Image (tube, rainbow, N blue to C red; front, top):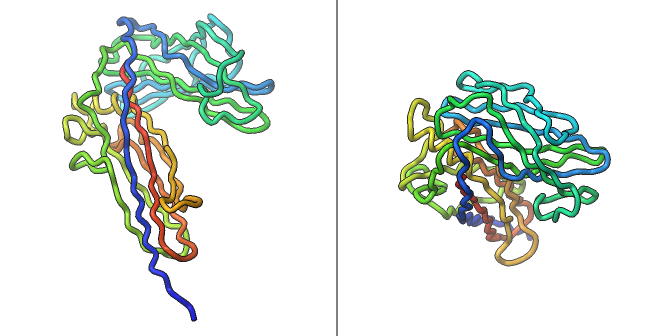
Length: 284
């Protein structure tokens, strides 16, 4: 005799929040970023990606090669939209350390790599961006064994934007921190995508709006918000049937991020899985 199972999956997703306050730099076209951590090996080649999000658009470019202290490197491939790209910035390494840096500063660092850091000075080539705007930098290192992308360092010359009134939500209509999905088995892997939204004062903070002062600050805070997946686990034990992949939305989109869930419904029975995500909102 064969039994048929009606498989129900309860996927409980929760968000947690924290803030990190940094000292505000002085107003000037040349400024220092936060310390940028990256991976290094004997045969690695590094590409530095620089991005600047202004009220008019999001622009980016790269620098590839071997970096020398106190030498200004121009950014290549400087482009973006929806506005006209501003002046091409230059990047200078002002300090570095590539010995004895704890691996914890380079999350998910593969074996055989070492963690290192640069302190960068970015010359934007002009001052008339209009606040708020933010510069971001991260390093992608490649060797024969693979590729590693380091964490993002940020900098700005604009006044601090307090994040106390901002929140993250599964819904754009109201602040929703928890979400429950009830799904029936297909006998295969179910794919579903869940957007998250930035909220301000309990209202949706839509970064896609242009020519709108609120939209400008929504984009700024959105760029200062990072998401870390805390993993998924079955409440009854055993290996999780759910994996979560997080992709940050571009600056000028209406969502903050897109979370893809892959839910394995092969086999029988039912299970309850919890997935947790942590957002970090920063202040510069």
